[in-house]
Length: 262
Image (cartoon, rainbow, N blue to C red):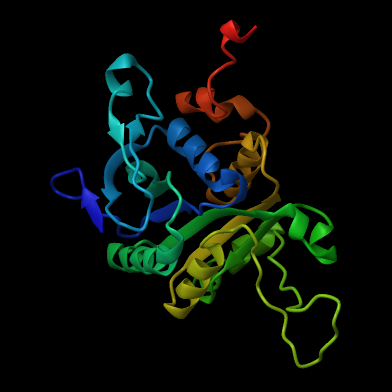
């Protein structure tokens, strides 16, 4: 359930919603961090649910001591009214047994809020690609029929590659077996996409094949890919510093090695 921190509550009608899937390398979440930090988006509420592991922490986008002590929760909503864009940032893993319930909550909120389209930023295990997926760019997209009606021309101009369907049983040839959509390491990506197709929701998935490790470069790649479509910034790939790295990334891999160890 969405809980507003404003009175009156914000109106999301005809806004674009951008959100991450908790997936391999946390690439989607890191990309969303870059968007929130760069556009200085305003927090307008949070998602109250028992489907995420409970946590809290300091403001990840603090710019001064005064706002550094603000408490933040696992699923928060931000807006940039001038861009007609909302962002849902998810900071905690989804409890495995409540994945379907969380997807249903998201679909219900998206429908009742009146978003014009939803874009999910995600990732998938690079080592589980099949032969056709190893060619060319590691970036892929999925789009529901509802969104394809309005975005077909734009997607064609971008020359993006759609996520390939792969054999259910690789190496076995069976004419009666249809290829399937497979997003290993993608968390709720596939389920949310399939739910959105069933509910006729305009939703797109942008994902990147990657491996666990230092995924900051992957986050820049994915957010620049999104920017090619939504035009949040002008030519950020030519000037990478246009994307502002949040202060919380200074501890992305923990604190430094204590000198007392040596």
